[in-house]
Length: 418
Image 1: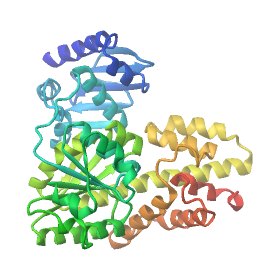
Image 2 (image 1 turned 90 degrees about the vertical axis):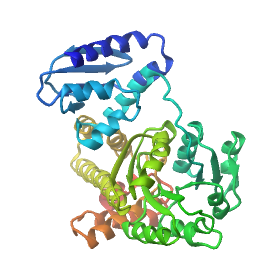
Image 3 (image 1 turned 180 degrees about the vertical axis):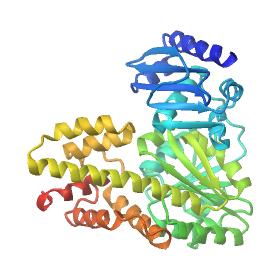
Image 4 (image 1 turned 135 degrees about the horizontal axis):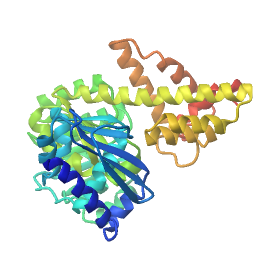
């Protein structure tokens, strides 16, 4: 009964607040979506439909929606939804008290709607000083939110000009990775590949030379599980921690604070990293104490995305060959894929828009695919699309497409690649 009343009150409050809460209005305008909140026994529930800033709701315990938030029972749902802890829902997911059925990205967006309704989240009790190494498209978004949420910030980037916006807001600019590590308790690296990460750790002026005992290297770069294991041991011998904090999402998600972070490492180090990761993530998922688990998980997620790109490219090529308008497949994919990122890629592949709004470049994509293939060969040997995609990516690179969007390899499915 309490949960039913809470959900009804939530619907009233959303409608009322949308008239005067600018942040909430902006969130509501971001997408059209439907969300069911219900208990596993289907005795309590309410459907929320959001369309062009308007809100429609109805009670009931069953139905279809873009995503269903399925709570173990009404009392657990009531406690989490009324909690002052902004991570209460994320914790419920970790413990299994809440399951998401459908589009996880819609669930993330809905969580941001609820946070906007409550007002800005309280700043965390600052216990860590953070250094961000690497201020590319993704690293800059991470640093922006870390600084925005009140963490003392040190930055280092090979091109110092990219650090200027953070320095102007009070960050310290380090001259090298060692100097950055000397001034921080958590060093976050957002770089390109295994080589760049290993270099900033082990070089004479690398972070390990400056890390104090007990400090943490939080690695947001997509690296191989083998390197994660190697770095775990290197840091342990130095009296420090290595935590994998692989991120899922594009650079614009990073800037908006809506990434998914996959965390793995020693439990006490992970707990220290959570407030930092929460600053740039809508969801933080802890996978275990072996840092490599986060890297295995990230590679599987990227493999899923790349495989779907490949499928779409093959189907578009088939349609071109037999004379089916690409708009037909565009509509088909938009109704088939509820994930907004996949919808975006379906549009980019259909329009062959590989040079506009480039989020992840092909040169980075082939690196990730090679990591995926190596991980598969060392374990399940089941990621059979990887060699095909790598071959097509290499063909595109040979054409000088290294700065095109990584989905551009799908164009190699066209006859003669034209």
